[in-house]
Length: 225
Ligand SMILES: [Zn+2]
Image 1 (tube, rainbow, N blue to C red):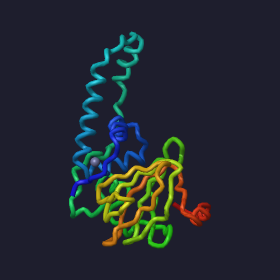
Image 2: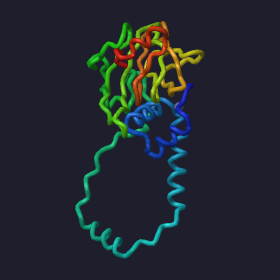
Image 3: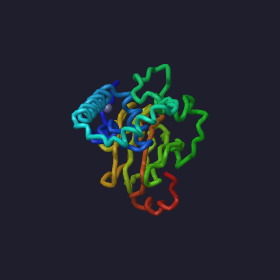
Image 4: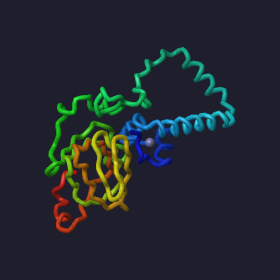
């Protein structure tokens, strides 16, 4: 089944322009691996970007700069570092729930990951990515038990969630494998995992969550989300 919930065009444009940080780029690229529709949009943005660059009149190059450039042609060429293909073909069932490029970060075997318990029925594992300009960006795997409800909370910043396996509902919206959700400080929600199995998600947040339910807000200093 193809994803129903997609990143905004603005986020896809940022991705095509290479201007997201590493963590957000990972969430978007992993969505693209599961979503032919958004791959097509990004491909169009990329070709549009290329056409715009070509349309710009080349500025006159000062002769000194040209000489420097020509001199550099004799320098040894740096060996290019292999970059994983960010538009891998869609994952197939035999490869388990983790498609590329996420697999390059966490491997394929979810059981060898060091999970930390957050609350009853919720575990998380940090993924090593750059922390972004503010140093606060975190990418994590979240594993939520069947039927478990995440306490009502809001966000001091933004939260991207990509479903890798299972599903959850959030208000009247239903999210399944490949679906992408974007929340910000306007969102106050309490997602609940589907009853029929564990829900595995990739989340990228740039600020801590804040619990908002009565009593629960007292727990804010203690939560490890
Ligand atoms: Zn999509």
